[in-house]
Amino acid sequence: MRIAELPALYEADYHVYEVFSMRQFWREGAVFRMRSPRKTSALLYLCGCRADYQIGKRTLWAPKGSLVYIPSGSTYTTQFSQCRGCAAILIEFILKDEDQTPFDLFGEVNTVSQNADPVIRGLFEAAADVSERPVRSPAKLRSLIYEILTHLAAAERENMLASGKFASIARGITLMDSNKSFGMSVGEIARVCGVSPSTFRRLFKEWSGKSPAGYLLKARIDHAARLLSIGTLSAAQTSAACGFRDPAYFSRIFKKYTGTTPGEYGKPKRKTTS
Image (tube, rainbow, N blue to C red; front, side, top):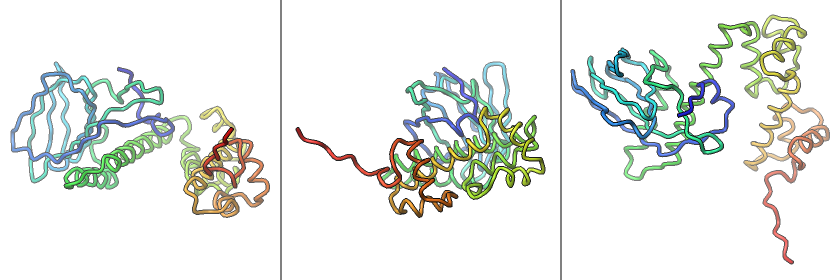
């Protein structure tokens, strides 16, 4: 099974299949054995218990409040302790890349976080709620696992940036990945980081292989395309929302990147008859 780094999911185009979620109510000292290889991957949020995993000769202790990733193909034994109320929330799924090749995020059972943040806790609770409804919505469940994985990938990406060579521009990179930067110049983003524009440009290009201006322009166009696809904003309103002061310039740049004008983007193509 191919292993993909968690931070890479932030920018990756991937698909989630066979999503299932449930609340688990384990008794103190309960033991679960996965004797045959798992057919799906899983994330387990230990909301009300501790879990001790035995994976071959390896032992993993996952405290209450932690998030555990279990890859497909795993066999293991788990003992639960400190159980209270709903002990855990399980989400199972299969990940495939854009070429439909399955992949996992770890090669063996591992903790993603030992203290899941409020966003993750809320998303897991929402996933369990969806699964417990009389009429389930597979699409809603998939959307929640996308949100969970995106949140985890973004957090890991920021941690890597903040502790590595590019720590000085980490705030700027995070800012450029949000629409809060759309009205800002590269110089203004550099000032947020406390570095000179030239230093920011050099480090950013070393990190991404792209110029910050080009990266930011592409992000603005991608966001504009999403807004136009929804269809609630006009081309002029979209231009302003994405930080373009000149609608004519926005139209030219948008067509350069997408091959069509903002006014035509997202409209269904007319069928021609012969």
